[in-house]
Amino acid sequence: MRKLAFELTTTAPVKKIWSVISDINNYHKYIKYCYYSRLVGDFKEGSTWYDFSTVAFVPLIINHKITKIIPHQKVVYVIKSPFGQIHQTISIVKGKKTRVELEVVIDITNGLIDKTLGTMLYKRNEQMLEETMQNYKKRFPAD
Image (cartoon, rainbow, N blue to C red; front, side, top):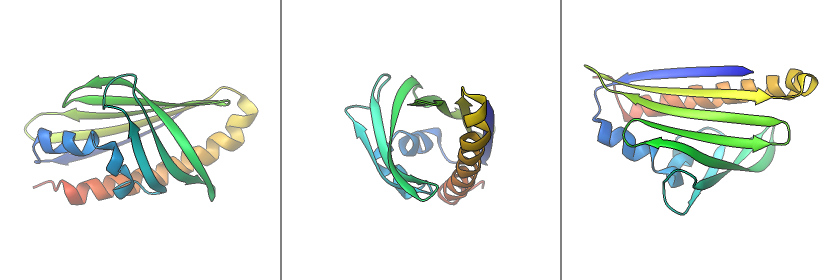
């Protein structure tokens, strides 16, 4: 199992942050390698969404399922594949300043596949999330 975690601190109102996080149809504007994103139905637990992305230069349609929503606090997505799952969690933690936490857990069940595909997915997600957080920092400055 591989885990990535990123965080940013901002003074932006939680409502504004949540409006961006819950607007899946515009994820492609912030997320590296994502060229199109579309929510199927409403933004609620059990709903699905997909994005058109590239992994190792290969274009793919990636399906996500929303498994948990706590409005204005947290959303969790899961991506299932024949090799395992990827869990993505976005949390908003309100304090003196607001923290936006992004966590991705890559769980490839086969050890041999994990050594190759897991390593590649980790690097790709690391690059994608670093740039995504930079884009969010521009949208939600610290001061």
